Structure formats: structure tokens, C-alpha cells
Amino acid sequence: MSTLLIFSIIAIYFGVIMAISYFTSRNRSDESFFTGDRESPWFLVAFGMVGAALSGVTFVSVPGMVGNNNFYFFQFILGNVVGYLFITYVLIPLYYKLNLVSIYGYLNERFGVKTYKTGSFYFLLSQSFGAALRLLLAAKILQFAFFDKLNIPFYLTVIIIMIMIWLYTNKSGIKTIVWTDALQTFFLISAAVVTIVMITSSLNLSFNDSIDAVVNHKYFKVFNWEHKAGSNFFKQFISGFLIAVAMMGLDQNMMQKSLTIKNMKDAQKNTLTFSLILAVTQFLFLGLGILLYLYAEKNNISLPIGENGELLDTDTLFPNLAINHLGLIAGISFLLGIIAASFSSIDSALTALTTSFTYDFLDITSKSSKEKLKLKNYVMFGFSVIIFVIIMAFSGSRGDVISTIFYVAGYTYGPLLGLFLFGMFTKIQVKDNYIPLIAVLAPVLTYLLNIYFKNQFDFDFGFLNIAINAFLTVLGLLIVKKRN
Image 1: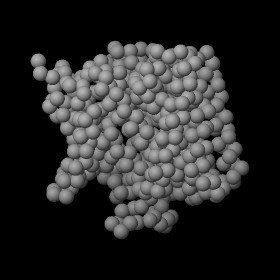
Image 2 (image 1 turned 120 degrees about the vertical axis):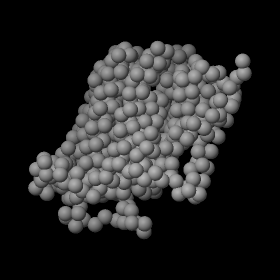
Image 3 (image 1 turned 90 degrees about the horizontal axis):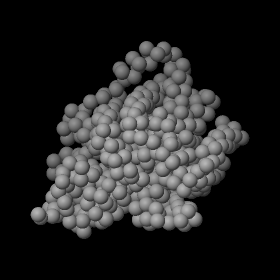
Image 4 (image 1 turned 90 degrees about the vertical axis):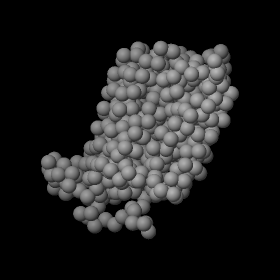
């Protein structure tokens, strides 16, 4: 693709996003940035949340990871589906009952201010790393595919993306994002569908032939019953359930969108619809992964292999084939998809981080309109800098980013999961002052246990470290419970 074409596509895309921002910013209130004035259509939120959940991670990393992990990620997806049912029928009613803006306000109601601040802090930590890693992947692909040719350094690529996101989110925040995310979801899914069509056409495969080729491929291994493996079915399914609850239901980023809907029943429709579309889309991307490897095999395209026999840099498989081998249409659709992935990786995350910090630590509800605007801008800029620093720190990492994100989530979301589950399913009161210490010790002990079991028993917790972490948090809460 020519430089002119690339910049034309980016300019048109950004122009559409800015137009959406303009129209959604009219008649905004002081709370529009944080709550969307609770007027968002549930079906629009559901479709848009898919793009935010997918981001560049599913778009690029899931197809590539098939080469080293087969179809085992589908076990994780099945656990996600059950997790979304828990979110729909347990967490959503709780949040609407308490009329929350920041969902961590629940911890204040249930335990006290120290627990509340601890929960919010872990969200800020988790979301900062998660958003940075998601944007890192999308920015790396943009750099590899396009901006290296223009001699634009990577750090400048990241800064440009973040400035563009600031411009369309700064005025109305979540009120704009529920609309822009829907557009970005459309381009993410369309890019996958177009790529599948181009591959099957190139290999002269009919629809039924394509299904047979995927099902009969050596990578189509869905279930792993080896109990020591990190991809074991029970580890993947249970961790899929727990990570869905933690990374969606206990995540201000995702729940803030649901809480912009005017009533609880519509919010529940939103979550159920979102979970169905997300599961189908993730399955589609896994199938795309096999087709990409099949295309590489048929066309003798060599892939880098490490000393242990595993494929290296699997995140570059999709962009490499889409841009360099599958033609102009596939290249354009990929460019639109990765732009959408870049924006959806960070826009709602910045809004959620800003909302959580201003509500949970700065008590913004008591401020005047002018003070709210100033604080919101300062906080949003601060988190932009933090995310930029994390991106640059991890810019030299290799492998599939999605595994890194879920691995990190096991340590940062584990205490949150333990706190919420303990609060909802027991009536035990605890000593609030000890909670920050427990929330630090639980992930540290989880990490040490993981190393011990690997060395002594060759047993890998995998993504299941979130369950161990949450269990240790609950155990710590029982130790510091109040005596009647």
C-alpha cells in the first residue's frame, strides 16, 4: 500500500470518529463523561463492548497463538460464557441496587474505606497494565506494517495514537465511547471475515471445504486432559470463568458501559448479548488462525522457530500475511481493523481509569463543575503518561501478548475477586485496616507457590493462578475477621 493510501484511510477513519464525538458531545452534562447520562441503548453497548474486549489482542494474538496452543483457548472461552452468566444475574443487580458510578463503592459499603481504596487501587494497576499491553500489540503491528516504512520511531507512533484518542474522548468520555466502540467492533470483525474470504479464495476452498480443512488440521485440538499442562481443560475452564468475572464483572472499564444503560433489565440483556457475540467472534478468530497457518504451509512461507521447537513472534503471522501476501483488499481491511484495535484498546480504559481515580480517591462528587473538568483533565493526562511508560518498558517483549495479559491478570485481579466473592457470599465482618496487607501478600504467595509446584512437581498453574490468588485472599480475610 502506498503512503498516501495509508494516511487517507487513517484520516477518513479519524474524521468519522471525530464526527461521532461532536454529535454525542452536544447537550452533555457534568456526568456525561462518567455515566453517559444513563441513556445508552443496550444493544449498542453490547456490540461495542465486543470490540473493547477483543482489541488488538484477539485480533492478532489469538490467530497466532493457535500455532503453539492448538485450539485449547476455546476451553477458556467456554469458562468465560459461564462467567458472563454470573455477571448478568449476580453482579449487575448488585451494582444497580447501590446505584454505583465506580463499582468499587461496593467495597466501601461492605467492608470499609481501606478495603474500598485497596480494591480501586488494584483496578487502576490491572487496567493500566492491561490497556498498555493491548495498545502495545496494536501499535507494534502498525509500526511493523506501515510506520517503519516512513521512518517514524515507535514511541512517536504511540504518542500519535494517544493524542488522537484524547481528542475524541476528552469531552464526553463514556457517552462517546459507547458509539465509537460499536464502529470499531464492526471493523475488527469485518477484517477477520475479509481475510477468511481471501484465504479460502486463494486456496480454492468452498465453505464446506474450509470447515473440513480447519477441523482436520493438526492444530484443531480442542480439549487437553493432561493434568500437569497449563492448558489442561479444568484449569482453562475454571480460570476462564474466574477471569471473565474479574476482568469484566469487577472491571470498571467494562462495567462502566453497562451502567450507562437506564435500567437493570436492559443492562442484563446487554451482558448476555455481548457474551454470545464475543464467544462466536473468538471462535471465528481461532478458525482464522488455522487458515492462516494452512495458507503459510501451502505457499511455503517460513515461520521463525525457537530452540524448543515453538513458533516465535506468532503475533506477526496475521499482519504479515494480510499485508504482504493476500492482496490490497485484505491489506486495507487489516489496516482498518488494527486502527480500530488501537483505539478500542485504550479509549474506554482511559475513561474508566479517570472515573475510578476521581471518584474513589479525589471525591469528585463534591466539586464544582469547573473543578470537575480540571481534575478530570489532569487525571486523564496522568494515566496517559503511565500507560505510555508501561508500553515503552514492554516494547521489546516477544511471543503472544494475550497469554501475558491473562497471566498478569491472575496476580492483579485475584485480590479483587477474593474481596468481592467474600463480601457477596458471607456476612462476616473483617478488620478493615489489615486488608491492604492481605491484598499484597496473596499475589506474592501465589507467585511463590507457582514456582514451587513447577520445580517440585512439574505442575503449571497456568491461568489458574487467579483462583489460587483469590483463595489466599479469602483465607486472609477469615484470619482477620472481627470477633462478636
